[in-house]
Image (cartoon, rainbow, N blue to C red):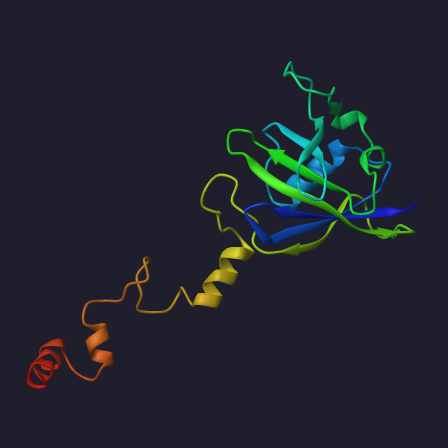
Length: 191
C-alpha cells in the first residue's frame, strides 16, 4: 500500500515543522492525533481541517465532531473521512486548526508518496522533526532529558552560582584581579 508524507508547518514559524507519514486509508482523526503527538500537544480541544489550494484559502471543512455551525458546504467528519478521499492533487494542502480559543494554525502539505510502506514503521509516524515545537500553554516546560541538555549546553550548574545563576558578591571583581575598591580607583584615574 502506498504511503503519503505530509509536512506540517507551524504557521507562525515555517522553520518549525513535522513530517508525518500516513496511509491513504487512514482517517483524518488518526492524522489529527498524529499531529498533536508530533507537536507534543494534548488532545483536550476541538480541531478542524480545511482542504486548501496553493494560496492557503480554506475549502471544505473536515471537523472533529458534529456541531450546528452554518457552512456553505456540509462538513465531513474526521472519523469517517479517509485521507485518500480528500487528496485531489500531488501537492494537496490542508489547513489544520487546533484549540479555537488559542487558534493554533498549521499548514499541511503533501510532500511525497512512497509506493510501498515500511514494515518496520507503525503508521501514522512522525518521520522528521525540525525546530522546537511551540508550547501549547505558554512557556515550554523543560523536563527530563531536555533540561539536562539545556544545563549542559549553557553550563547552568557551575559551582559558585546560586539557583538563579548569580555568583556571590565580590566574585566578579576577584576574577578581574582585585577588589572592587581598587578597580573603581583605577577607573577614576583613567578619566
